[in-house]
Image (cartoon, rainbow, N blue to C red):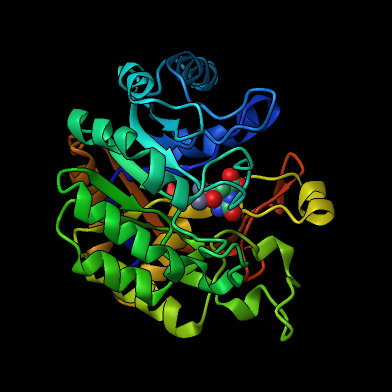
Length: 350
Ligand code: NCD
Ligand code: ZN
Ligand code: ZN
């Protein structure tokens, strides 16, 4: 088969940032997806979008870059920070659909956040409100320190967060929960075993990378451009993620976690996050086509996520043809992810 077409996809997890970065990366999202969950972990001085006012300001900034005739709709997120209350969440829910939790110091721009222990001790009333008003609870599930304050090794952090996820699933049976960017077999198995109010996003890069592409044999990062949180794990973990993505399972859907960082921030500060937005849809077609699973791609990219979020399935379709081509190396000083040397096997027809 040399042609493929599908319902326009939706990206249920993107970092667009603000200012000049937003301006240079957002076209890749609004040109390939008709909607996207725009994560609100903004750097200071904007800070995380944890109030109605901040969510509106960020939505307006995003929309100021979207051409008038483009139907793109951002799905906005309220960040669960120390200052969020059930009342503030209720107010922000007039504009935001998602309550987003990145535990403190776990990933980019999360230094002021709370831990899983604090969440369980003091912030369950916020989750109660999210459940009551039907918000999606989107979780970066990595535990960085155990109950004694000891560091948990990076590759074990996702599995270590599962008991906290279990507690939330148990206490909030009607809360819609997304286990974001699953990176391990343990997380896939957990989500599969949960009731239907629990789902997961899968990124492009976790379908491609294993820890050997990121770390040296001493466990130190030796390819910073493949480094993200949660980091890629064993080949057997990647295989488990590919298997659920290829199965069309309704609980697993695409969320790119495209996370642009200037090359200088990657090289000098070891910033976590890979920038995939420009290559996402073509590379997904390539991966599914190579595995002879193109019949499952539309579920993964366009249908499962919309159903979980309660969004309508659009009529608009996009088309691809099989032809090798090369993509650029970077966008405005941000390196584009692609481990096989900029080559793509499929091209979107526009
Ligand atoms: C993301 C970012 O850069 O904002 N980084 C990452 O490594 N995934 C944050 C996140 O999704 O955890
Ligand atoms: Zn995350
Ligand atoms: Zn993210």
